[in-house]
Picture 1 (cartoon, rainbow, N blue to C red):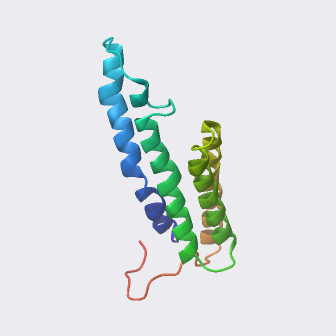
Picture 2: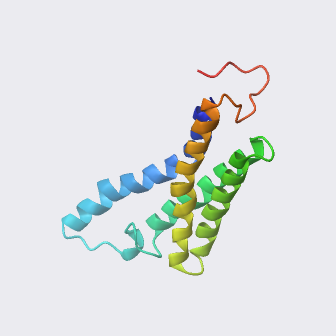
Length: 145
């Protein structure tokens, strides 16, 4: 029932950074490389350290971790959803912070936002089909569509 609220909070915070990074990579960096222009490594997506990759890590690691953790705060206490949101947020945060020590520690974060999101959506669909209220509805708000 409240799947749309979760998705709006979850994806809305990180999409701006992600889209900017990919837009710059597709419209500026790749045509420069195809044209034979020597592009510095710090501007290429996927290389570390790189300004573009760091922006991607901030969007997918830090901002999505904050979205998961803050969503965990507003979900009902002592539910599997709350635990999953907290776990996914911690995995994203560990991956984001871990990249400062070893670039391969980043791959912990996709467990949180990739695998975790699928599991959370399955839990929400199951709870929604059982007609359980997953997230509290604010007083005075309009009913969910």
